Length: 349
Image (cartoon, rainbow, N blue to C red):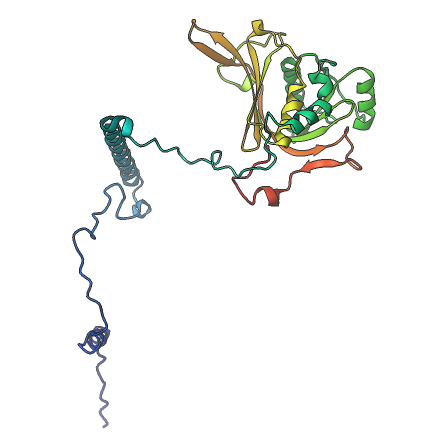
């Protein structure tokens, strides 16, 4: 009977140990550099940061408790650092370094060569001869026609009616299947200076075409975040028929300057301050936020504001020369997503 001898496998740890001994032999240690760690090199762990992931905790209540505890610890450290910095600034007095400005997308904006200088003679000449020069020279008064796409739903109709209470001398008409090319000559013949078309998708307003008459330009916006007066909390009473003031913020480039003048020409020249109503077009990161407020004097030094509605957000899609012509129109600017989204700090308005 043959006896088979089974060799016992040596544990892997010994092989690794032997290899490490060979590597750490005096012959191999001649080229090594001895590294000595000091107390300054060893940094204590940050108590605000967990040594493990909170997602590893299976119990939901325990996980929530640890998360709130971590959040409170971070807040406590933040307040302590803030107090320490304030004490240092008070101690240094005038020699204290200036406060650091937080970095935002707005203050890190890429410089645009078309930024408008108010003292530029070329810009002043262009403004004196553009399509809005007749309005700014007080030769015309704004008159707006507001209409919708074919077969509008109730929400779009109510939105148009509320826009007519914001813009003075605005009239709402239903298209009834008429093409815009047939509507524009009728508007010019009846003395309208603007044609505003509200488009909808799935019973919700989603677009606005604003055409300045009689020579253009025509602008297409995307509408989002529409809130009617009924949907707003703590809204004021219905707006009066007084002409509101107009505030235009952050329209700095040549394109933004043209869009700002387009909005300004919607309203009459002289606001009626008795009504205390303000229409604001605020541009931020190429999104135009519209708000309609009434300001209330609480005393001689304090003023409060009360939103009247509606509110919505506009995003510029295209700017076309002349009146509306979808086939043969000449476009001055068209939104190209692959160019605009390439840099988050680059804006066109």
